[in-house]
Image 1 (cartoon, rainbow, N blue to C red):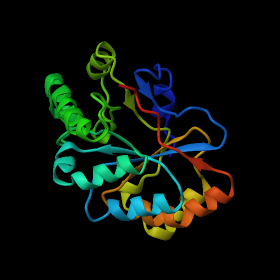
Image 2 (cartoon, rainbow, N blue to C red):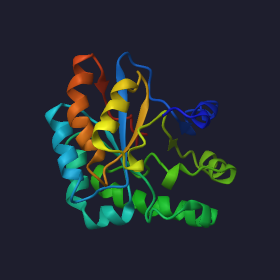
Image 3 (cartoon, rainbow, N blue to C red):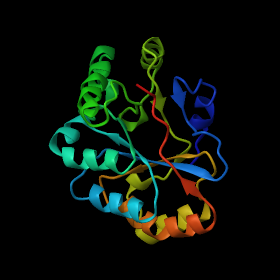
Length: 211
């Protein structure tokens, strides 16, 4: 859940690419990719509200267009909304201009909800290459990666998934990668959040990037 690649990326400045959150005692950072999803996201939002947890949602632009009520609820509930491209197509097949257009289009959609002209970025499948990093540096754009990969996209069985996360929970400062286009993360968190909170773990949204 903490591969070698994440350790290498830590050498990049947080202003360009962030792999861990602020080092506050006991605080972890849940992040959810690929939503909003009308079937799965509402239940996740209900669970987070029940436990007083704020998270960060990396949203796909065309899904924002189709489900604006869910984005409005995220903002209203105190979560961070962030940019996960417009189409969620593989960035490897795109030109740099197409990649940046994907981000610009989604930024414009999200601005209607939180008033921010720019948002924190995460690429589909976590794709990174030198040209994208250089362009983001030139434009003072911030990419969020992660330090803890839950591997929920591998479609684990519920009990195995819970057991694995329980045995190796996220540590203070970890940015946790999860997804809200299925119930796998929600089902696991329904079991684990109360345990983790009793153990003193806190969960917050990542800071925004300002106006």
